[in-house]
Length: 219
Picture 1 (cartoon, one colour):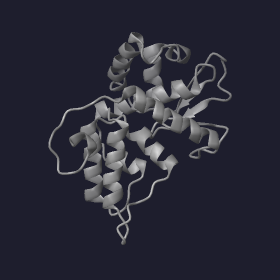
Picture 2: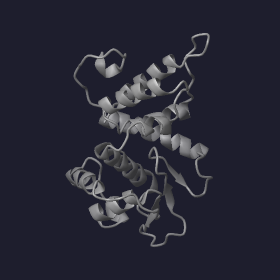
Picture 3: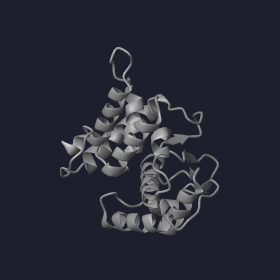
Picture 4: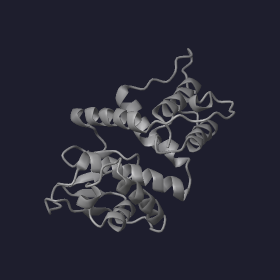
């Protein structure tokens, strides 16, 4: 997993590479930056640098999140790691009370096999040994499953009438109360707060290796 600083630095490389005619880096507002960070932090640093290099070599346009993720290719380990990040987002933002609908049914199936049901998935603290053990189980199970139709897992309320909907790309969670693909003001504040919380909780120092691009982990 990459740190927030590593993702921000990778985005700076892209912003400066795709500068306008006057040399001004491509602009990102706070919400856009939060979405990029949330989507790219599950990548390990080597994968992060690889997708940046691949996009620079293949496109004259600044990438959207989906453009960068498309460069990952069929890497089962990376796909499983991103799927786990989607589950963590769903646990934190959806909670155990309401049902949760995974647009990528493969993720929902892996949750069922790992936890048994959705309320049990929400019962662990992220710092607990049980959560760490189940992370390893989920990563192993996910790779054995095939992509499938959307799957809804029931919460404590016991009904699927008003589920939280988990998008298949980028790990962003939106309620069916809002149009798909849009963030309400409350969603935006929650997303920014979540990105900051995860950054403070998970960032770890990394060693140095050589690289021509100015990624922060390489300095």
